Length: 210
Image (cartoon, rainbow, N blue to C red):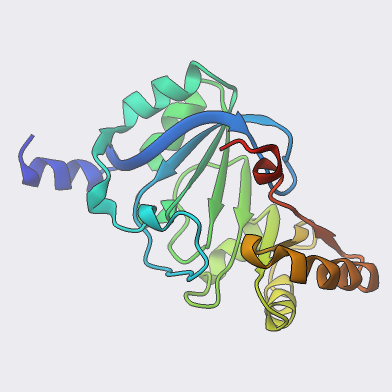
């Protein structure tokens, strides 16, 4: 496939820069403990300095993969798919989610919300970042708001983001992994004083699974 054809395929959502795909247990947020097939799409310019998958940032490092193959692979393993990145909304998710829906699958996304929302989603986990804020339209569609707490100022940021989501959105504070010993006591105190929030932990890291 020549470069122009690849680019056209990506623009149509028929190809996606696939970094990895794997079957595991969801470790974070509302669906933690649930078996799910993860599809990690390459490409992200949000630039979180504490990102634990920086290798996902450069989309050119990850092969353009036929969306139909991703769909077929996912359907072999689970009825739940989690699309993550990178920042998956960098790309058009319409074809991917249409195909997964045709297979009768439940489709979740983990996104910073920094790009327009495309695709059909059963669950939207919005994890906003200070470096590149979410677009306005995703706040009212998010099912779950997950704010990563790296320092004390992130509590202020979390409240700013929570003020914009819908009233049914579940609110989570999650310690950044490298700062967890310092931040967990602060998060626990904050949630006890502000019980609209819940604590999210990266339980997959404690379980030593992907």
